[in-house]
Image (cartoon, rainbow, N blue to C red; front, side):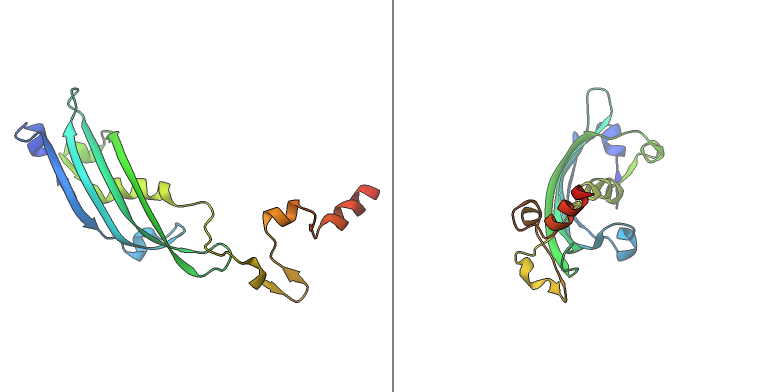
Length: 155
């Protein structure tokens, strides 16, 4: 989605308002933890600052479909954030057009959580001779690796 900045540079308008939905294909989100982006909406405006540089003031939100780090099931992860910055000049600026989708994507990837889980009960994740333990259990009295660490201290 291209934003034509010509009317800003010609000073016929003070700001360009944006209020639209943006969609991304599965190919566009490949290479990230995101499986799919849905309901992405951006609202805000572009304007020229006192130095005649383009600035953006955008609010965006949507839902990421991510794999849960514990259950490995696909889960919805809602996000929302703001982007209030001067846009750097690049080849697109010289044509007086900006790619809204690209600007938005650069900021959406910052919202991807490093770790994501909706699992509340770790008890259901176990098997023959193993179980998933929380970090609290690992540090606490019920640490299943405590015996091993004591054996290494003996040697």
